[in-house]
Amino acid sequence: MLDRWPLHIDPSLGIVTLVGYKYDAEDFIEAGVEAVLDQGLARLTFGHLAKRMGISDRTIVYYFPTKPDLVRAVATRLGDRLFLVLEQAFSEERLPRDEILKRAWPVLASRQADPIFELWFELIGLAAAGVDPYPSLASELIEAWVQWLAPRMKVEEGQDPRDEAASVVAVIDGLLLLRTASGQDLANGGAAALGVVGGDLVEPRKIRSPEPGNVDQESQLSD
Image (cartoon, rainbow, N blue to C red; front, top):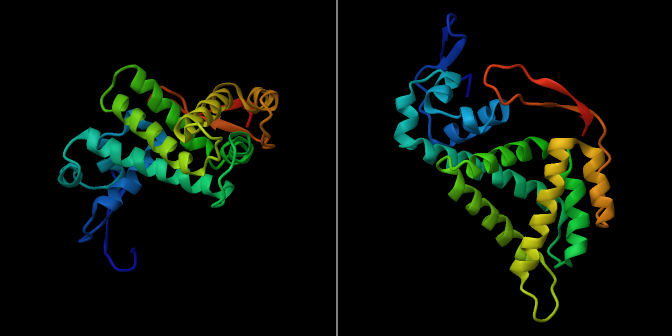
């Protein structure tokens, strides 16, 4: 892209704009994903994203008329990324609940997935606080996870695949909450007690400060 479009540089703002480049919805979704991975969902606004991209916020509004529209598109894209990560652990074969947990945990308890789940738990917090559109969005994303898992569940006669899938979501979410809040050791201890295989990543990771403008602080907890 950069070799096809002239650049306009605004030194006062530190912004580089592609002159004549026509943005589309996909550009804004991907830029939104990068923005929330850097600074969290709470700071995703038209103005903030426009400044990052060096454009007018009116350009974003053309594709996403409201902030909830933008948030929903970005969160859905993050969910799609999560499913791509999960697909590494599964084949077309249906698996019993315990085997799905054993395959999913090492993939999800990883540095690759950590940023997505930090945002997931931020989203859950915003949903619990009743901030629009997070309550409905959280429900939709959980439903998408259950729908993704249900066809992969091997169940006994009389068992509901959706119920079994929901139980997997409950266990994995609980373990990942421990991992995000308290570090790898406690999460893997809980996973071991449940018969789930834990990951083996031990490098410290940075945890984003909840206050806008604060620098990231190095966690004393291991991954």
